[in-house]
Length: 167
Image 1 (cartoon, rainbow, N blue to C red):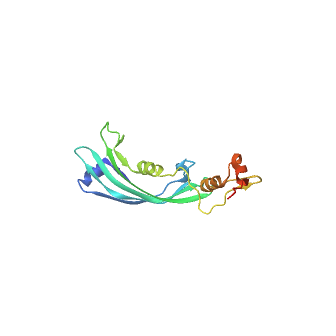
Image 2 (cartoon, rainbow, N blue to C red):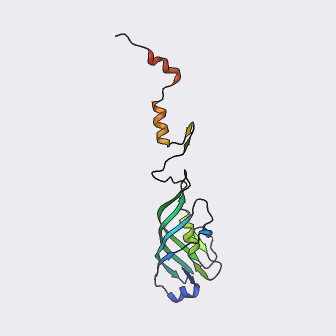
């Protein structure tokens, strides 16, 4: 997923097809929210416009990310899929959505990595997990807490429960 400007010019106006499996070194991830990436595939196509010196690509990135469980910190595999239209320019450009290339080389790897980082969930809880508990305390789900709260009687009104109505 790396092309020189010369290679793109030689390609002409022909569409460049992208279909590659990408691997990421776990050390390069450097994020406490993302532990590993597996089965990452980048597909799509791109066209180089020599008059504007721009390469436009439609990318689809799929794979599995390994993220920590918010409760137990165990690994959880989360599948992801994202699509993006990316524009690369070999000339200086003021447009925010255009990637300006500093050298005469176009490399998709950093852009693909940024697309994946945007898909990392803020919090994941492993299904079927047993929540930790100790003497006098336990971690419960928010739904369980709300259910308990509804069933609880306000202590100020507890005496009314003893009140009997005469029919």
